[in-house]
Image (cartoon, rainbow, N blue to C red):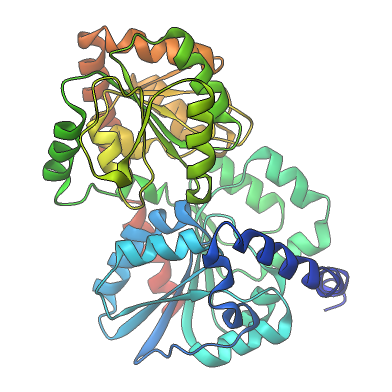
Length: 419
């Protein structure tokens, strides 16, 4: 408790600022102003059965959790699955993925103060918890340990950069890691870094994202997209982050011939309008996916301002440039693009997905560019090289299929915890 005291005091002091930030963000993304009581441990939703709790902070973690949630639903049919999030986009993603399934509930995880954590646990009384990837809250984990609720960190990844940040607070990090009942790490390197920080019972289970499969209606939806686009070569800039659109659009405007269509899908929906303004600033004609209209022949950029269609964007593209890798954000998941056979180009910054990116490059499913200009050039070169695209498509599907099985290994660890 003494180890957590400075951390708790910081949370108490920061709480008014956190609320002001929510109000500020709510001006552009109203979802932040909804369900505010949940962030303080007050919930209207009640589970009709015993609860298995899965925490997925935002969109990426929620999509990664999809195979595991489906496996949990099948393995424990008498339980409800409670999905908790920290962002409106994560919550919306879970709604899209599990819409209509009455056994999947969703809410926000409360702020990490002991009173809020205990209120959350008292209300839902989970049998056990699963935290996806790297979202660790010391007071919440301490409350779980006090109430003898086992919690597993699943699909865990920890970059060298993040490990150094945790190491600056060795006592708090060791206490937090030690409160976890088990950890399923993506790679041996992740496992070693977690163990060095004080984690126990760490096993390498692999990356659950390899177990994500395209939706059943992917062919029909892809055909619809291609009908809208017409017979044009398509570059996809997928899950781009703030600052990257400027770089990619500038390179595209300078280098791409007029028949090439850029499909631009920003990572965060609150930035759709900003991206549209950037397109106009570069003098490129824009259409939006939300307009639900055919793409005109002189349109240069199709803005993917929709949720839940990332697989379709990948399948409809000829080449995918993966966002988050053009500036030092650490990259985004490239496995989905490979799974549908779309050749991939990544930028220099993939430290959050280092193992998957390097494996894809070695397999011949992806190429690495030095910067945004180089990325656009590589993408355009692939558009002109059908043989290389075909070889990368075959390699991508093989790469995505080869490392499946992390969900089953994670489920095996969870069965041990529940027992």
